[in-house]
Length: 289
Image (tube, rainbow, N blue to C red; front, top):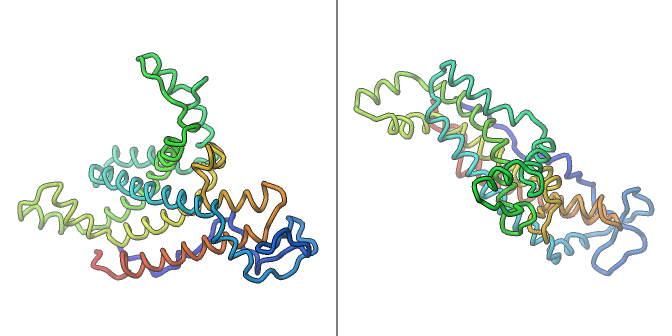
């Protein structure tokens, strides 16, 4: 199944790109100029906000956590989807039911899912700590721990999103020619060998599509972190989009010029990574059937 060439360079609605960095006529420092959310008394700021971006320790911290999230969430989501696909290659009624069940969390709002998991994990009234306590296991406060907060958010994101990836991969796998499986079976291939040497090559372009689009969304992670941790504890889960929102709309003085500079910084990273992946890791026009 060959996908048409398409652009994956898009930005989340949270990353509002202003035309050029704007500023208040009364700058607060010699490096950064500011503009408030009402866009009054603005003037051209040049590259001051970009310079500040590369000097800001919180930008570096947010960049680290953004990649930490993406480099764990994307492979985990792909692995879970591929493992389930291995056992769901047939279009039976059971497999159709399972695909529907796994897809259901994806159609739910990320905000609703995040609230649900926050309640389930709450150590005061959450169901999971309560059930574990019944068997003598004390569950730590996952979302208040600098060690466990980000892995918990990653788990919730994978839980919500793997059904979408599984659905896309299943559709591609069902399009692989049955004659290829029959030929492999004649040659004595096992079920596992047929999956790795027939199915995987047959859906290579689709895997590339899923990896790239999932990675783009992961680099723009915001909703679940904002709801579950708010970027804490101690900025341990603060990502670039969260910091953009914080500087532009949440913490006074509202510095839209600087927030926009960080958004451009994030956009450039996503664009470069996307081009590299599409050109070298998952080039179009492979041998997919």
